[in-house]
Image (cartoon, rainbow, N blue to C red; front, top):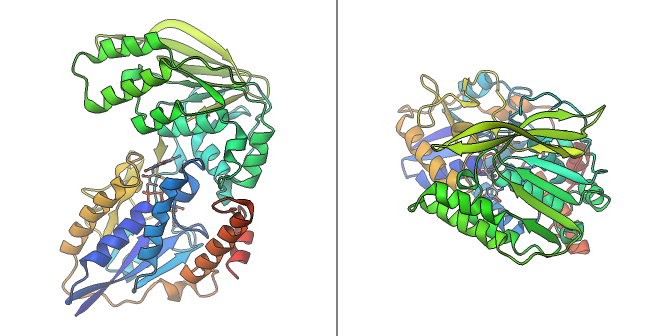
Length: 434
Ligand SMILES: Cc1cc2nc3c(=O)[nH]c(=O)nc-3n(C[C@H](O)[C@H](O)[C@H](O)COP(=O)(O)OP(=O)(O)OC[C@H]3O[C@@H](n4cnc5c(N)ncnc54)[C@H](O)[C@@H]3O)c2cc1C
């Protein structure tokens, strides 16, 4: 029987689904020893540090991850960063195959003047801040202003805008990081404007998230009926299914009776950011007014200025490059998940770029693992593993992680929350008994 050693780098959904696909592919003749390497002391990737705290059901997928992690022949090496604590060559030489599942964590910049001002942030920093990611616990998030502008037309922009526009009491029983919850309670923001460059027919929100907006109890949600009508006309009589269901969901919100809450979440379409102004911090944003001509979005030359103290851009992500791994256009350079001429593979957002929900990574990882298995050599390398390189390094193994997880959940139970997240690395290690 041949036993192959496979390293998976990144303990997000794609990494776990790759491990699951390997586990499901084991036969009497061929088995796999899986070592999962994760830079944080905690696994689960964006399920822990991306998914919005007011969407707890989505996070229950972590039960699937824990089942995978407690299956025989799986080891977790968390608090170990590829590129810093280990080099790609360390893995490539020792393992029969190395799967890069490191996601896409850098926010795309707007590339406009004033973006560097205090109060101008990327969703790639703001989201992990409210989700308790240890690298972002001390992010400067000025919420002492009345109006925030969110740039983007996808679910991340919507999460960000909703988190700012919600009555923070609605988050009291969530796993929002304590520092963020207290900042949101003290926030002066009462108006959140989400600005999309294109029309409503081109927005990449998904309809369940849009439909959920009409259930917000303490926030007025405003979408202009005329804009949705115009978008329907532009989309034609037979729009694609997703476009139709998005426009239907937006109509639901647009046609809802007006409410008179203290907080407002507005959608604006056909506005592109041009400049952010302010002395020392954001004071206003200037947006170019666009129109649609023959199916194309073009600038009208007119501008609109919105006074605001916070601008958050949510216009996509790029992968952070790791030495020894080739990248192209913000993702690992790969063909169907394989890095040509190597024993490196890529799955998830590192492979495809920042698109797809958690479930998308399952079918995707399963295809890549099929290819990986088909390309394995006849006999395993037997050149050792990562444990020998990490002697003296503080590794969070599955047992340590279970201690951290147990402590966070127990702390949460006392307060009626799913968990209370530790947000400092040393605190996480302490909870893990390290
Ligand atoms: C803000 C936000 C909200 C979302 N909400 C939803 C939702 O509600 N529902 C849904 O279905 N999908 C949602 N998604 C999409 C979903 O999170 C992604 O499809 C999924 O997380 C991608 O999985 P991944 O494993 O490729 O990347 P990730 O989840 O990012 O995991 C990558 C992992 O690799 C680790 N890593 C990175 N670099 C290194 C390194 N050098 N060495 C070791 N480890 C490393 C990271 O720490 C991380 O744990 C959301 C995404 C975002 C950004």
